Amino acid sequence: MITFVGAGPGAEDLITVRGQRLLQEADIVIYAGSLVNPGLLSLCREDCKVYNSAVMTLEEVLDVMTAGQAEGNEIVRLHTGDPCLYGAIREQMDALEENGIPYEVCPGVSSFCGAAAALGAEYTLPGISQSVVITRMAGRTPVPDRESIASFAAHQATMVIFLSTGMLRALSAELIRGGYPSDTPAAIVYKATWPEEKVLRCTVDALEETAREAGVTKTALIVVGRILEDEYERSKLYDPSFTTEFRRAVHLKAPVEEQK
Ligand code: SAH
Image (cartoon, rainbow, N blue to C red; front, side, top):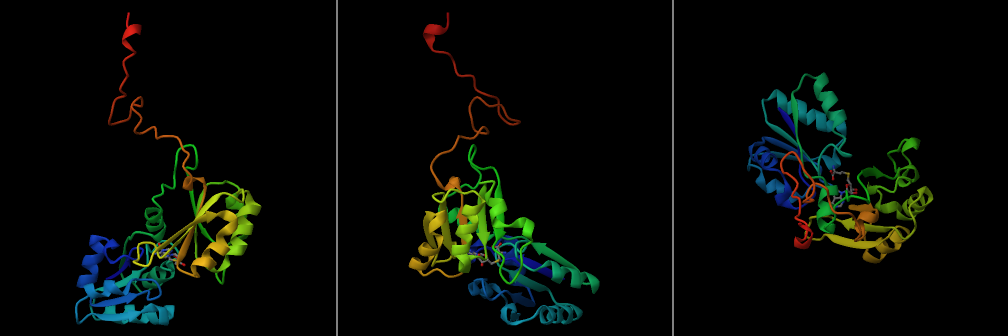
């Protein structure tokens, strides 16, 4: 069996309990060495074979999986954050399927959640934004034209932008071209949840200089939106006058002099 495991955003204790167990039991681990915290590998058995996929091609990864499976091994493919985002797992799953090799996915805490925690932010604030756009600038991997940063920026919803720290000047220009006012609050979160985490707050037009001054060139997320400000409406869910499936509204008594 192959299990794709989300390693979490960085801190070693942010892997799931299931992910931890799978790592402890694995005969073979193939980990994404560019971003997965190597400290997690100390969970592995001493006789576990460990491969760093940063120096491997898809074909080489599949060869290790196929040979390991043939020998009856438990194999963990360890991806950063949650594997469903920019994880390149679909091509691995499809190849396994073609070869009749069973696989499962164990989710993880994505870095966009780690960044929210670092910021003390809620991405969905009533009256401000009820949507989160997760996207990236086109790099060597293209982004379909209909998904341009500017087209998403037109909504002025919360945006979390991956894989774009090297293109911040162009990112600012696209965000502003799309409709975010240039003074919209933004944040750069470097290595969220790692010991060396940095949280840099700025505005949409100042992303590039903010990152440059802090020496941040990679492994960061850009968060944009008015949820980073202090204004919002309180939630209906916890409003005393709001009845939910689990709680009846409390009707506050009118002041005594009006109770005739
Ligand atoms: N599957 C991962 C994302 C992989 S793409 C996840 O769910 O988080 C790699 C990009 O994710 C990096 O370029 C960076 O933009 C972002 N990233 C990953 N870990 C991060 C962290 N701890 N802090 C900030 N950004 C991170």
